[in-house]
Structure formats: C-alpha cells, structure tokens
Length: 86
Image (cartoon, rainbow, N blue to C red):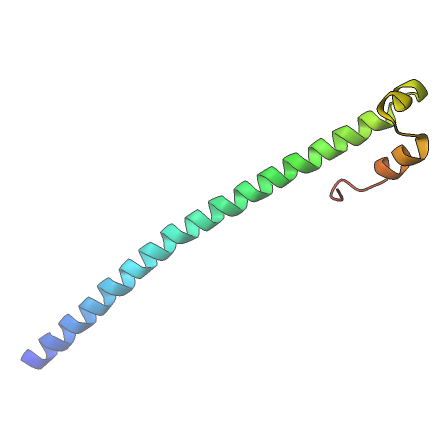
C-alpha cells in the first residue's frame, strides 16, 4: 500500500510539473501570437501606404513631375508595381 502511495505521489508530481509547463507554454504562445499579429498589422499599414502613394503618383501632372524630378517613364515603372513590392 505504501508503495502505491509513493507511486501515486510521483505521478501527481509529474502531473503538476507537466501542468506548469503547459501553462508556461500557453503564456509563451500568447506572446508569440501577439508579436506575429503586430508584425502583420504593421505590414498591412506599409502596403496601404504604398498603394496610396502610387495612386498619388498616378494623379500627378507634367508640371508636378518636373517639380519632384521624375519623368513619366519613372512614374509608370513605380505605379505598375504590386503593393507588396517596395
């Protein structure tokens, strides 16, 4: 009977240590998810900014292009890029 109690106590200790590691894993997983979500959120902001900038370039007139030192060909190259490409 004593041996069974010792064995049972050993299993209980293992279960507690396993439970703690799952809890710790859950905390680490939450931090990783938050970091990953933050990365994607900032990436979407960058893509939206590029899209808006390229739309503004498309609307420039000849005089505006001359003011910023770009010609129509350079602007065409830029506005034809997909939003994910810098």
